[in-house]
Image (tube, rainbow, N blue to C red; front, top):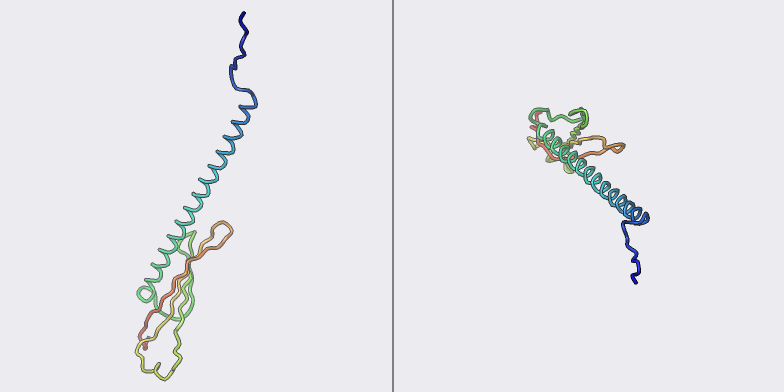
Length: 134
């Protein structure tokens, strides 16, 4: 006499639901990882571009733009703005300052942009020399 065997013809509803939940969690995690990576890449590109703009602007001070005390600002494009601050460097001992034929200036360049609701900036500073008669 043969005993009929129980055979599984497919997946149960519980197994299918568990598989779908695992797949949904995995896909959500992957999408979060990719979106975070894309956001970080965009932030890095903005920072690198702002640094390049700051270096270019700083290189123009004293050649294309005059080296005069004060603060100026402007726009590079619709995303980036710039601010230049030029201030004379003072000497602690003023007795030697009259004998110097050049005057040092502190030059600071800030590149500003908005990243969502946060304002970001890159600031570069250097010293430049101007002739004492300028």
